[in-house]
Image 1 (cartoon, rainbow, N blue to C red):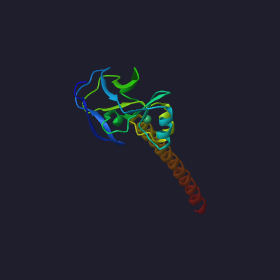
Image 2 (image 1 turned 135 degrees about the vertical axis):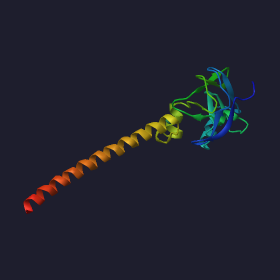
Image 3 (image 1 turned 45 degrees about the vertical axis):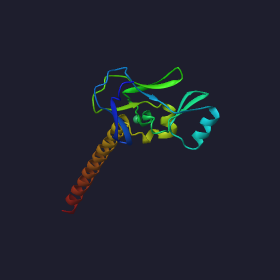
Image 4 (image 1 turned 90 degrees about the vertical axis):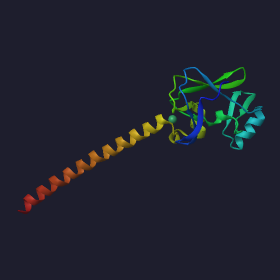
Length: 166
Ligand SMILES: [Zn+2]
């Protein structure tokens, strides 16, 4: 494979991989590598909390823990610009669209990983952060409207009261 078109850098969640030059759609950019585990070994590793297991098939799981496995640094996104594909028992990461330099490269780890490991409400991908920011904004605006309504009510009550006391 040609020299890497990306570098390791700081992301929202810690470390991530960022494009260092334009990358064309459907480019194979990395391979997810590591020790091959059978079912039993994979289950043991999972129980120990290994978060870098890539299940290729029931009997073949790649343990991507080793730091030289650069692909372990791809972060998850619910709106990814790359994908991981299994090809002849190996795992490659391929871009889904044209990438601009500086963009973080992400792929979708899958629903199960999102639900069980990350937790839907903890997902730090740009789509989830945007969604949560929007919800927070809507909540703030709803609160503001409610406060304004209450304040208006109090004002009318006070006006009535002052009229009566006159
Ligand atoms: Zn997300």
